[in-house]
Amino acid sequence: MSGASVNPAAAPRFAPGDRVTVRRAYPPGHIRTPYYCRGASGVIERLCGRFANPEELAFNRPGLPAQPLYRVRFRQAELWPDYQGPARDTIEIEIYQHWLEAAP
Amino acid sequence: MSGHEHHDHDHAHDHAHPHAPPPDADAALTHAQALELAVTSLLIEKGVFSADEMRRQIEAMDARHPGLGGRLVARAWVDPAFKARALADGSAAARELGLEVGPLRLIVVENTAAVHNLIVCTLCSCYPRMLLGLPPDWYKNRAYRSRAVREPRAVLSEFGTEIAPDIEVRVHDSTADMRYLVLPRRPAGTEGWSEENLAALATRDSMIGVALARNPGA
Image (cartoon, rainbow over all chains, first blue to last red):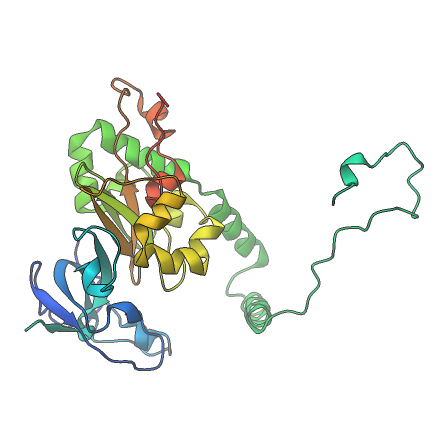
């Protein structure tokens, strides 16, 4: 699973197993980070590759440097405090690196 | 249409017909529809592609169907080494079977005794069209897209799928560049089945994760 051949590309800052927090930000535009996970913490499941930033591509800009894209696994209870199912239930979301910070 | 069932067509078919014809779909175009028509005719006019090339693309898109995904699932059920490759790199595994997956990355997620996977795209309607064809209408509606992440077990239950509480329900929100295919569990009682017969058990819904594979004994 090599990264898309888009140069230049930003270097990955996270590895599988790392705990990360999604930035709690609400910029306008074409944003792929769902509202419901902003501010939430989860664990990197895998690095998917590097892709031109869709927030830039949407406005016909090159979107470079390409951003590492991760799959982040969250516990449902982290996203929805009143989640009705078992504590083991999870959700995985694709999130670009510039939306992630190392979790404290 | 009530009453139409009892309508008697033995009479002369004149224009004093007692029921109305179906309504014409001639509402005003939405902005997006008008834009699409304008861009399409410009691209054709400028020779970027021809009308026939566009028609052929649409025809090819419409010809894809869940049987393609079913082939991948059946091979994974009978060939553990292929399954391992599919879980490591879904796109490469699909190409191995001669399935055209295009530039998108396919991720295959496996249902096991411990995990049940469910696919959704909360932002729009991302779907592994190259292996399943066009998505069902419910996959694109707001109720499924919002509830699949918020209360997946209630949604599964409405599809007739009860997942035991000791099994993790893992939802995948396809928000970016990946596409997902669920590898359902192989139904019991199918030992020795041909790949072709197995492929028919991997239904569209089982590869989205709202159902289990068809159980031939049920």
